[in-house]
Image (cartoon, rainbow, N blue to C red; front, side, top):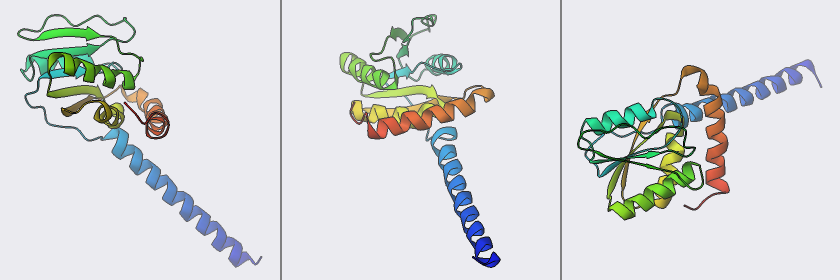
Length: 177
């Protein structure tokens, strides 16, 4: 090969790698850093999925602001206490089965059927927002809104990596509720 063809080949490879990197970073940002969220409105219940710090505070804040008469808190490992009483809000804690976002989506649907919820506001960690929406859409027919709480800055790389794997799993292996 002539030096010109080798240089052109390297340039093409660099362009392809650069394009793949830009697409990957853009998709990561759109899916996990800035997922679709909804403005809070009146719903039948606020449901908090377990995980990174900040979720419980956000869920309690929304409940205290009067967005729902019920607050359901996922407590898969029993380590977190159910939140203290919130005035004029019924607080329940639940243990999903399995102890995953899929289990939380299933439990949300079961609680909705039990308490006749037609609308919920789900509080999740920001990176989990896209996958939680996907999972809940498969299990619950009512109106589901999503609010997010950002993790600590140092958790982002791990959480984005985790979400890529978990989202691929949800899209390919675990396609049902």
